[in-house]
Length: 119
Image (tube, rainbow, N blue to C red; front, side, top):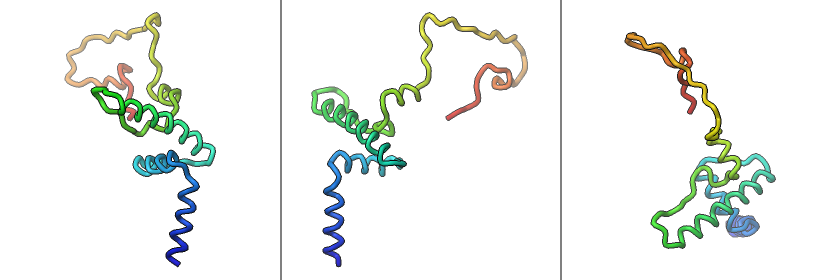
């Protein structure tokens, strides 16, 4: 019975490419979930591109070493969207001027000067 289980497991493992196995280890390390076969294929592709960059960079004589992080399976567009909008140099900014006060404590969130803590 043990040999059957071992043979079955070996058959399942051999059905995955080395990149897919590396990606599954990555998923386990960072506690990620993938909800469909299509998403898995897409994420493996992004992960593979990142992994190739890391391997090429680390084989060079650079002064720093690259490695995987929680964003290694994201597209460049997803990552840039997460970073937020960067205003252009030509964009006009409207500054809000607040009156000076001698109050001991000011809640700048309620005054509209800052936003509440997000993450």
